[in-house]
Amino acid sequence: MDNEIINKVANSGLINLDLEDYYVKGPRKVIDIKDQLFMGMILKEKDFREWIKTHDWTQYNGAMVAVHCSEDAIIPVWSYMLLAAALEPHAKRVVFGDLEDLETELYKEVIDNLDVSEFDDQRLIIKGCGNLPVPRAAFLMLTRKLQPIAKSIMYGEACSTVPIYKRNN
Image 1 (cartoon, rainbow, N blue to C red):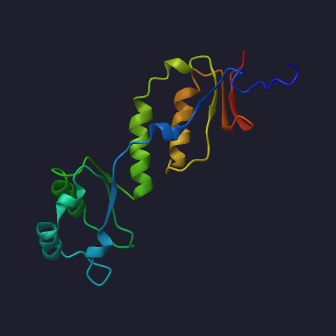
Image 2 (image 1 turned 180 degrees about the horizontal axis):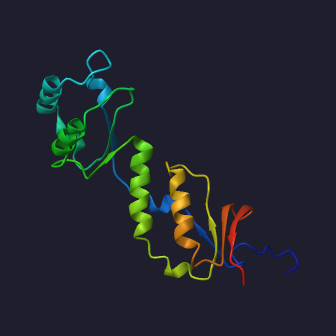
């Protein structure tokens, strides 16, 4: 058995963490107030209220919704409040910002509630690349949550990690 292949990574005691495993499933939608601006600059209350009244809100049923304005315009606070009120019976979650802000909020909630006791005194690798939209902020939040308990934290893949943190003994 001189040619036996040994998986040194599996035997190393390293624990791989993939933030994609914590991705909150469900549809994402964006409401960009720019589409309601008069001449691309002004939000008219009467027109906005009419849009709120006639818009099909059922398309947001069960969705996570990001609300923002991508135009450089002064948007009154009440407009966001009207949107929140209209979305409340339909949307699963509503956040102020774009899709990345939405993902950041979702990951913040997941990481804040994550039981990390199984990672106590462990050597961890946080996987980097993937297929789902994991915001950069999630890596920062997870590192902060794990650092007080982990023996070490690395980023990347087992074959090529970047050292992030190592506890001094």
